[in-house]
Amino acid sequence: MFSLNSSHTQTRFSIEGVTQHSNGEKVFDSFTIKQLEFFDETRLIVLNQEFEIINYLSSIQLAIAHLLEQIGLLFCAVIVVISLLLWHQKKQHKLSLFAFGFVACALFSGCFTLFNLDVNNGLSLYASIGILIVCFVFYACCYSLLNARSQTASTLLAFASQSGTAMSIAERFHKQLPNTFDLRCLSSLTPDCLGQYRQVLLIASTYGEGAPPETAVTFLNKMKKTQTLTSKVNFSILALGDRTYQHFCAFGHQLAHLLSSKGAKQITDVIEVDRGDKDAIGHWWQQISHFIGNEQSTVSLSDNYHRLNTRSNTLVNPKKPKRAAHRITFKNEGLTYQAGDLLEVIPKYDAIKCQQMLREKGFDCQQQVIFQNTEMPLFEAVRQSNWLGENATSAQQLVDVLKPLPPRVYSIASAPHESNIEIFVRRHFDDLGKPGLASNYLCDLSENELISARIKHHANFNLPKRHCPTILIGAGTGIAPLISLLKGMSVNEQRLPAWLFFGEQSKSTDFYFKDEINAMLSDKSLTHFTPAWSRDGGGYITEQLELHASSIKKWMLDDNAMIYLCGKQKGFGDSVISCLKSILEERVYQSLIEAKCIRVDLY
Figure 1 (tube, rainbow, N blue to C red):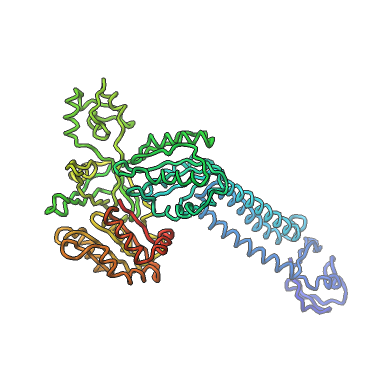
Figure 2: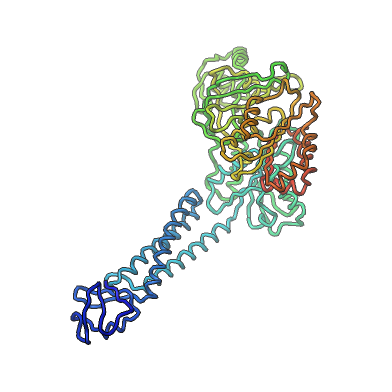
């Protein structure tokens, strides 16, 4: 390969530094100066061993080759980045990724082919460009086809979730469905979106006393304003709730009535689920699987629980036995979670009482039985079951008809970087003085006692990915997740304003997490602390919020802050939400809810 300079005269030229005088005679046996004049604009020439010209590139062609080489290198870098981003996505994204990678590799290899200027061993410039054009057309067709497939889903699986339970169930079902089934949160839907599907499967949680999850309010308002749906839609609803509340599964029934009034057809009755009852969930799945033609009518709903060792159990307000609150820590056996997540615990009845009841029925408490695929003594199986004193001919027959106790969830007060997992629990008694099952079980734990628990991710209450000022509002044991969030923020080097509003009765007895709060105030991870001690004349949380209304409004509207609200819904939660709507205006409040700038966890 030789380079020919454009400044050659007719009497002198250079080839690879070899100078020859010439008056028209042959310079090598293969070509003359006059032949070289034909390549006046040539920048690269390829000769064979006999010095015969077999290929060349002009300056324009060489520039194109260099440009394509740079594009090829860029495409290879981009394909690596896209591979990392899309590897865990759905199958259609992986196919699109494959098509894109094929184009990138073809372009890259084609650019090197351009520099193999031997026409006998490589492709010409124009042939290479033609191949690249074909590759791009191939990619465009694949992308259009795959994109069309993703938009023609016949069935929508949607969820309305407050604490993450409905979302978790929906995600588990979605893994069993074909790629043409869409999964979406109700907050991202409009009435027109529903009209794009033939079937809509909804998993809806009821929040508090019959209310919809905060993120579903906008969808409900839009649906109420709609005259009728643009097309006929079949729907089925799985309603999640807690039967201890008066308006059990009310939102699920409200949603079913609303959809029916707008022209949608209900294909199954609303299936009510009491505190995650797996039998009810499985029954609903069997019904809708038959309707949508899904071959797998059963799905595994079992969860992997871990054995956690109790490290400590501290009563923080011994002077208030009727409102006893316990800080309980467990050794973290490698569980991973985020600030704001929940600990789901399997409660147990008192062992001594269970043994006494079994003896009265004539059973051997220590007899081994199989419960939940695990061998254990009879009294241990009964401790974890809803046994109301029913009799049976044998211990195993008794266990076979018992349903396991539903799990209870508690906000985690510790942070992921800490060695222990901590929860904050108040001992509960009903109006008749009967002790609550889960809270009393936990408050009575002794050191080194084992519990069955697992992490339940609470995506609606995790820290945002963006760094921003934060307002945290809590009362009573609702301070637990707020402490976790503050601890999570404290590990960031960038200190941003954080404001904690906390309400309780008395500073002397109810200043929970006092040491942690003072430490965070000292290191500036907590910049503002506004308590409301109602029995000490400090008023209530809402009074403090109104007192600082202008600052709260500035933080939210000018500084793009976040609000986290946690505590009991009745009384505290409802009044705080009403107050925030007044401070920010209801329209602005709802828009901030939709943008997930206000996150609510009330119980």
